[in-house]
Length: 138
Image (cartoon, rainbow, N blue to C red; front, top):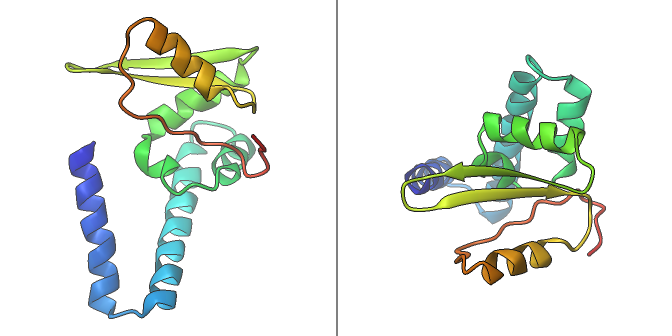
């Protein structure tokens, strides 16, 4: 995924530099690019899932990294986890050198207890990311 992130960063920077955009226009350009990506994700995912559910989920998270970090399959898994959620749901992907764990829960300051459980089991946590709906208050 890191190689993809570097390529994405290069493409974003290249688009701004080729256009010789001043700061404000560069920010606007990046926002337009993100909005187009949001529309594309919603359009693509809506072929398999209810559009209103996809749109509500994608537009509620005001962090551009979410749709760049997670694949469409991952996001579909998040939606399935949210749909069946009682208290907490998880998605685990095992890689050669590590496992990626996604914890899905209701809006709450829940990330730190989840990390504490992992730490207690002598798991090393290399990074954590939280993607919350815009109106969430921690």
